[in-house]
Amino acid sequence: MRKTKILVVDDEHLIRWSLEQNLKKQGYEVVSAGNGEDALRIVRDEQPDLVLLDIQLPGISGLEVLAKIKEHDEEIIVIMVTAHGALETAVHAMRLGAFDYINKPFNLDEMAIVIRKALETSDLRREVQRLRGEQAKKFGSPDIIGSSRHMKNVLDMMEKVAKSDASTVLVQGESGTGKELVAKWVHYKSARAERPFVAINCAAVPATLLESELFGHEKGAFTDAKAMKKGLFELADGGTVFLDEIGDMEMGMQAKLLRFLEERTFRRIGGTKSFSVDVRIISATNRDLIKAIEEKSFRNDLYYRLQVIPIYLPPLRERREDILTLTSHFIELFNAEFNKHVTGISKMAEKLLLDYTWPGNIRELKNVIERAIILGNDETLLLEHLPLEIVAKASSQSAGLTTFKLPPEGIDIEEVEKELIRQALEISDWNQSKAARKLNLGIDAFRYRMKKFGYLK
Image (cartoon, rainbow, N blue to C red):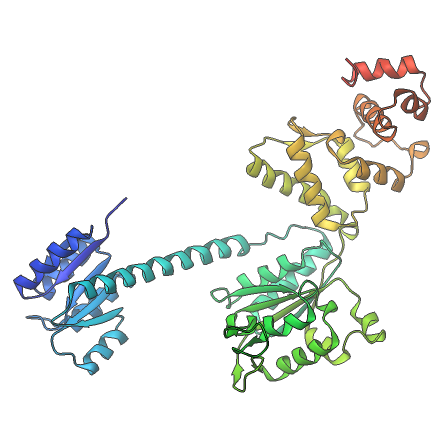
C-alpha cells in the first residue's frame, strides 16, 4: 500500500528537519522545500497528498503558493503554518482553499492530530464522490427497460421532469411496476444528483413516528426523544425525498405535509424555530387516489398539490412487447450475479411468459428469472425451470389445449410432453396412478414416459 506523501515547506532548516523526522516515524513519506518555487516544482513532479506550508517564505509568499497549488490540483490538502497568528491572514488562506492553519511554535502531537483529521476528511470526501459516481452510473442512463409505446411515453416524461424544476411529482402504478426506480432515475438525471436521495415507505412507518421521521424532533419533545434528530426533509436539503405508498398516509399527517408543500418550511417536533429547505418531493402509490378522495381517506387538496407532474406506470400485461426484453435483461443481470451462462429461453417457456398476466408485474418477472437462473443448469431456460403455479395459471389463462394453435415457428413436442409429465406428477403429489389419469394414460405408458424423461430410474 502506497504511503501518504507529505511536503513540508519552511525556510527554517531546523523546523523542516524536525517535522521530517517526526512525520517519518509516523509512517509518512516526506519531502521538503525551503521556498515557494521549489515547493511548486515538487508539487508538479511528485504530487504530494498533503502540504504543510509556511505563510512567510522568501520570494513568493505562502498564500501565493497555496493559490497555485489549488490551481494545479484542487484535491491536494494544504495546512498553513504561521508564526504570527494573524486571524485575517488565516481566514484569507481558508478562503483560498487551505484545510486548516496552525500557529508557531506548534506542538508536534497537535500537528499530528491536524494532519490525521485532514487525511481522514479527504478520504471521506473521495469515498462520497465514489459512491455518488456509482449512483450516477447506475441511474444516469435508462435502466428502465422497455420499447413499447407506453414506456416510450413514460421515459419522455421522465426526461422532461428531470430537466425541470418541478418540486412535486406523483408516480402511480400497480405494485411491482418500478415506481422507486423511476424516482431514483429522475433524481440522478437532474441537477440535484449531487445532493441526497432519501426514501421512506409511508405505509411501513407508524403514523405516530412518521412526523418525526419527516420533520425531526428536538430533545425532550416526547418520552423517547433523548437527543435532537434531523428529519428527512432537512437531511435531503437540495436533493429529493421519495414518499412511497403515500396513499396510506393518515389524514392528520396529510394536513402537515400539505402545509409543508405550500410553505416549504417546517418546525421540528417540540421546536419553535422554522426551517426552510429546497427538496423535490416524488410521491408514489398503487392506490386509486380519486377513489380514496371519494371515500374521504385522502385529502383532495393534497392530491392536486402532489400531482403537479403525474407519471403513470402501466402494468406489465399492458406492455407485453416489453416482457421478452425485460427477460433478456434479467438473464444478463443474474448470469453476472450467479456466474451462470444462460444464453436464451425456449420457445415454450417464452410463450408461457407472454401468456401469463403478471399480477406482480416486473418484480414478479424478475423473481421468476432469478429463480430459474439459480435452479437451472442448462444454457437455455426451459419450461421446467419456471414455477409450477405460473405454468398452471398461464395455461388456464390461455385458450387451453383443445383450442391450442401451433405457432408458425413450431414447438418442441418432446419438451411439451416432458413438462406435462412433470406437472401431472407435482399436481398429484408424485402419485403415479393419479398423474397418469390426469393425462388419460395407462400406468405402463405413463411410467415409460417417466423413465424416458429421467423422472424414474
